[in-house]
Image (cartoon, rainbow, N blue to C red; front, side):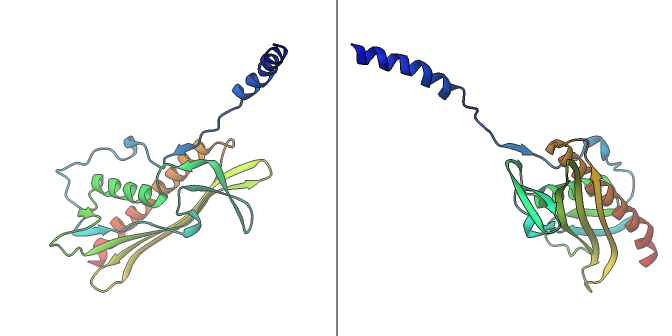
Length: 205
């Protein structure tokens, strides 16, 4: 009887402790842009360049290619968040942004990740060299280093080149702010790359 009473008393102390343990869940973040940033394509507006363009899969350097989110706290030191990850690999997110952009902006006659029975005149190649949180003491910034190329497919010649290495301060340590900043930087530089194409390619043709 005494053993039963003792077990019951001990369980009152042990069980609340077990029940109060906090369960940590992984949070997932998306790299995207607001749909209003692109708008609807005017089907009556002719393309600036009456040629087909293939959109290559974005290449992301290996340290940043997975769903892990990188934090650079020193020149050569990267750590990765344990409970914060990208929802999908960055290469897929960035490739989708490029495709959506040119689907709505009539720069080319048509764009696609792959053409059947058509030899596109151009190909867009994109490389992300760095994509990370930069931490200096208690200050946090979003860093994106990206390069865009427009290449002629017949000769392999690069006709348009645009590279940007940008760092944007974050108001606080919040991965949502990082995701928003990365998306905004990428979209802004993609727009500048597109402007270069519009301004320079018609003169080349």
